[in-house]
Image (cartoon, rainbow, N blue to C red):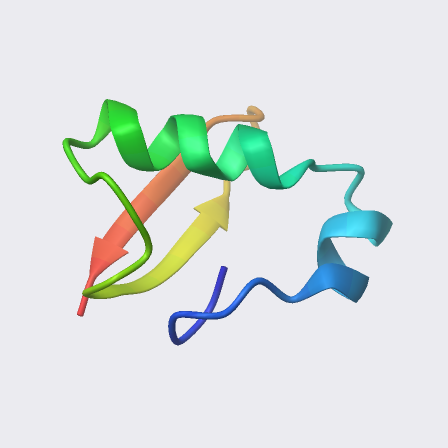
Length: 52
């Protein structure tokens, strides 16, 4: 996710589903994409949520 949008082409390339991004948001204490700058897929497969 970047700038509050789901880049569907990137998600498809990286084989990441929207629900996986949503799970990362919930784990970081967020209920939605509002106020999120980005979600980064790390090399170990985890996701880092950056508030914006």
